[in-house]
Image (tube, rainbow, N blue to C red):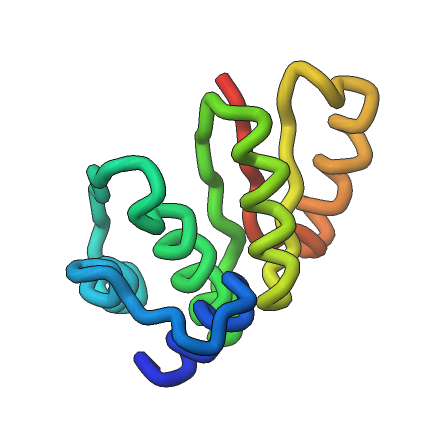
Length: 120
């Protein structure tokens, strides 16, 4: 499973030499095993990749969507693009897209969203 996750990581980052940061794979593996995780790391460490890679692997198993809460709208756009590169269908609900909320909710209910990013 780690090898599959590593391929997804490299594809998401568009870097063939990308590698897991210390503790990153362990966090993903714990989520795959159904254990809750609190990941507190510096900016740029790759927390989003933990969520996206775990989501990709869990969705491959037929599991439900992931809810990701983030206060940074500009980061959300970048995260959604990285998720898309590995086939994780991500969308967001935030203060800039209120007119789209109903459509996003419909896609979520239909299983067409893998990760929903929400800004408080």
